[in-house]
Length: 287
Image 1 (cartoon, helix red, strand yellow):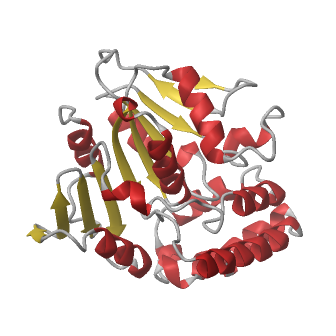
Image 2 (tube, one colour):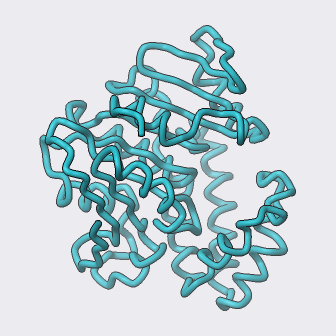
């Protein structure tokens, strides 16, 4: 395993397991406010199956301290440049992203030459907004929140996360009861500068994101879309993706299939372990 902090790439952890050149490297992308530590348990498990890379996206983790990463560089451009350096063609990539990382992964998948893309896994990520008015409204909300973040000191960030952000309805109202909540919160605030998070929020807003819905009509590689069963917003995305396919009930999950696309609505403790599902998408042997 190698941890890299170089001036010309995003901060990243790269675990090489000696996989053959024909096997895909797995790329893990965290969500807004997080960093690559969020996906470290998953990287450790998947690292036994394939080469595995986790990135700190711009404005997050160690990448927030990289002076050569221009503030205007999008996460997609920065991630693409880093992956081109780490895994140059013809290496194949399996992209895995959560929330903002899922949106970045989807945009990366749409930009990669089809032979380079081994698969895509999106965990509660938006494919974008088709409606111009909705995009403008979302951008306005994100710009307003970014302004609030810029005005915060680091101690105020911790307070805001506790009292407002993680009490929002999208977290189900019970997130702070989770035994790992305090450790997760520490990762959000450890050395974080609210201005960096603000810049990322404004730059990577869903309101600025190009719609990837057309690309998902006929993806050139396997796609797995996963949303928590109590996550109304992203279950609606999953339903829309599945509109033109038949439904299939299996175990504790609901899945809809077509040749290259699998959509799942899963419940914690019931769904198949995520590392096993990722291995299946990548065509790798299960651990």
